[in-house]
Image 1 (cartoon, rainbow, N blue to C red):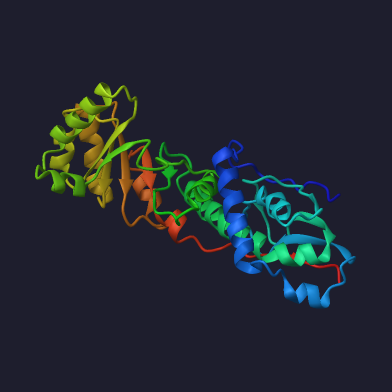
Image 2: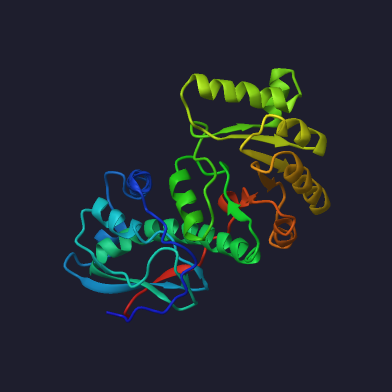
Length: 304
């Protein structure tokens, strides 16, 4: 077994929870069905002896943060294959180019058939984790945290948000069911641009229905912020505000409702995130973590 590489842990170990597991099983089945249907891997059947065994290594071609290792046994279980895996790392570990992420031993047919499915998952999830870690590193020493959004691929949300956690980020609400976020379109649909009344209605609904869900409202201006703060929302999202505006927003919050958290969002890049974090906001949400992170280059290295 390869000695475990000394890797700096970037945060508390992320949890591959039951939602992540259920999602992984469903997506693994869908992916393998796309490849195999009821026929199988005809290339392997035609060219690879049924009894041929080998050990293959999953190796990183670039540095980053690994995510998706729990999908390896899930994929091979769905292939009904006895492939054993030695995994010296954990999701959330920093890796360098050339790092061996896992060694897989078993049927060459199974290894070849599962290769693309495993790499599709792991390059995508590791890419999200790696990009998230870059943002987390960029704001180190400030009081802000990096959050994702609901801008996820259909069916992939649990895994993509897990990958954000692997990179040291924090999950925003998982869906529409677990958090109130009053956006500009909600205000427009109400025909009432007042932020305070929308927060008050949301608070009243939560109390009457026995829910204990935080209330967040999006604002575009400092005037809207002042209006929203009258009803003490747990979070106010400051949409597309410049650093000078964000600093003013923090000052207004501190003066009028210090318990409310402020979240910056909109067009945030690695070049701008530090200046945004230094304004004093507590939260920075970035949709690009899940919809635009480039894949991390990983590959199967064969012994011949």
